[in-house]
Image (cartoon, rainbow, N blue to C red):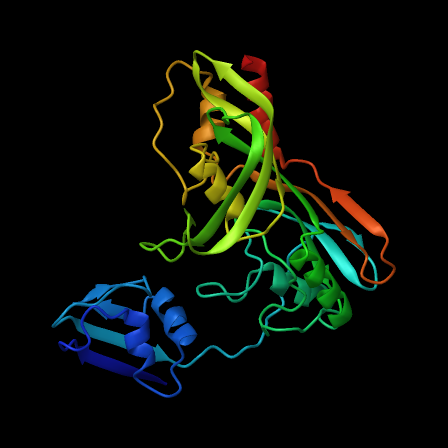
Length: 325
């Protein structure tokens, strides 16, 4: 079953946000539900599909909004081989591959790390908060690889969540960025908030949002007249905001190689090794890897720290750059 909302914007409604206007159309239509449906391409304004929940509407805009029945909050098991680095009765540490989302969301409810965890052991996952995110204490982006800790019970979940809130978790990432960091080592400290034009992106703000702190240092610089300059950078997080490293490095003018959301145009490659060019231009993910995670065990308070190697597709690029260097 589905229902349709058809509206022609009146004078008193103009300049309103579309998600706010639609959420006022029915008692059972929450703003989060409206946002979800908009992201699922259920909204048309003047017969054009709109996917931005924050879009401002104009006088006489014709709005067509399809309200489908919400998907039942049931999680299907997903046969996916988890790379388990550590497991005990309280938690699991996994090494996530790039290309898989952490939990179900609009457009993908079945093929995520959560679904894989359900397939692996559905009875031993925390169930605090969102029903579609059992065990999930923190997240890394779909196209970021690396280490993530999963809670197997609620006590562990609460303990680990507090460590994240207290910023006592060690999180170290490696990224390959365009150009040189200036200075080569330092701290980026800003506020991060939703991008005003694209709600799926974040941006640095001087006044609003959440405080975000990234410590970085340059590990290697790859510089040759035949190639653009690249730097291998290590980032240690003090906070864990959405897209934090990607936004902070972009803010510094050093976008991460392969990052499709936070990218800039660079000059074309001229006369470089064909295999290196193919590796760089063919990278279908951002060169960002959650290399190290450290925390106190929620049961015995013993400090644990885990490190993972760069995936082969990223290591391949570094090997080729080192040959030129």
